[in-house]
Every structure is written in C-alpha cells, then in structure tokens.
Amino acid sequence: MDRKERLKKAMKDEAEVLSRNADRIDYEVMSKITEILGSVKKKGRKVILAGCGTAGQAAKRIAHTLCVVEVPAFFLSPADSVHGGLGAMQEGDVLILISKSGNTQEILNYLPAARKKGLTVIGVTENENSKLGLAAEIVLKIKIDREPDCWGLVSSASTLAFISAFDAMAFAIMEETGYTKEEFYLIHTGGGVGDILRKEL
Image (cartoon, rainbow, N blue to C red; front, side, top):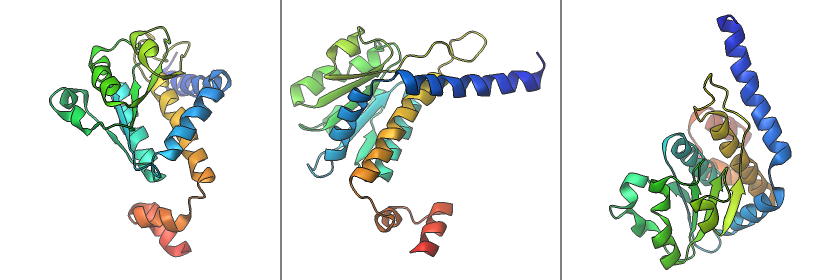
C-alpha cells in the first residue's frame, strides 16, 4: 500500500467507526444525559469533565462545546484534582468522566469526593463492567471494533466517537432550549463565526 492509499484508508476507517457507532449507541442513555445537561443552567449548576491523554483532549473539546450552547462546563485536570481542584465540585453538579478502559486510576480518583458531595456521575467508557462503569450513576458505552493505526492501539477513532456523541447532545440542547443566534453572538463575537453573525444580526 502506498502512502496516499494508507492516508485514505485511515480517514475512511475513522469515518466508518463513527457511522457504526451511530447505529450501536444507546439513544435512551444519550437522551437521559441530554436532559440532565439541558437542565444544568437553570438549576444554577455546572458540568465538570475529566479524562487522561486523548480522553482528556476529548473532555476539553466537549466542555467547550457545552459552553458554546450555554451549558456551563469546564475541564478539571486529573493532576490538579487531587491537589485541591476537587473543591470546584459542589452538590448538584454533573461530573462526566471519560475513560476508554474505565479503570484509569487518575479518573477513579474523582469518585470518592463526587459521592460524598452529591454529584451526578456520568461515565463514558467501552466497558460498563469496569470500575468506572460500576460506580457511575449513568454509563454511556462507546466501544469501537478497532483503532485505525497499524497496531490498533492509538486512541483516535474512539476519541472522535466520544466527541461525536456529545456534539449530538449539544445540538439537541440548542434546539430544545430555543437557543437563538442573538444569544450565540453575545458569547461568540470573534473569528469567522463572529463575522457571519455580525452581518446577519
């Protein structure tokens, strides 16, 4: 296989993973999570996300997207969490923990404080029988057949699948809350999107 073919195959493999995930994912669970996230702002609560490595990058992206649709959210670093950062978690908040294996110790470190403080814990993992899967109140299972790299080990397609699921939830919240372009422009005046909104409004 030459380089161009290899590049095309990797891109097609990732696209196929997202397509298969759309057919497999539990939409009842997604709907429940969407309802919870959509109620956060009016309850004066917030969403806290965490993950390590590529799951951490997915958590950061998801937190940003939630903010874009007016769901207060932020990423809490696993390194900072056990050095006082867990103080950001308060009763009634929603904690989304992302771990492909569900057994990442840095992510499990959030659980004792979350339980004691009364947070709603949502676990995103491929293994519902993992430590995270068994501890979370709600589990969104996202399992792919194989990562597209030559070893099948580099978390890439699975990371995109995590992000895709929460993109869908964010877009549902936009429609269900009647989110307007005027509200969007208030928080997004910069960049190309800001330029488009400025001309339209």
